[in-house]
Image (cartoon, rainbow, N blue to C red; front, top):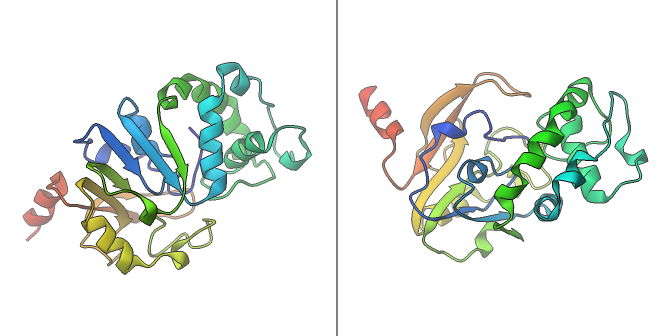
Length: 232
């Protein structure tokens, strides 16, 4: 629903579908996996209060709330607007593409994004009404039977993008936590990471990088296990 650094919007179809009624995203971000399977029970958790507050606010918004937001142009400063903090946050994520924190100045791409963003968001508000949204750290979650879609800040890359980036993550601890979840576990990374035995998924070009290869680890068999074996 909003632009975010590391979003899976372009590659969400590459990940296995949920095998459980409930989806849990412990590093919620823009929650593209949950949006794809929005009819499921969904629990979003994020340590970044700005993200948690934004999702909670969107959950309460009407279509008219979104459609009446200001149309901005390149060079506009969001700080000068007489609107709520959550509205400024949403605009701040569209102001420049693929940011891990909202920005204040609108770029030319941001101006273009805002021409279609409001209608897109308004049309999807019904999808998130039933979701549960929490502020907190991944290791505070109850270990319940669910589909766990785990998309943390990556081990290598993007360290300056997020409020709580990879420097704040103990990847050995996270690996152990992932391997001990109940249910289906899907972990996202790129092929540079070594904290789990990740398998390559697809090569992508992002807004701030080129030629990285997305990777996956799962506690259940995926199509990428077969691809990996066929290489040897």
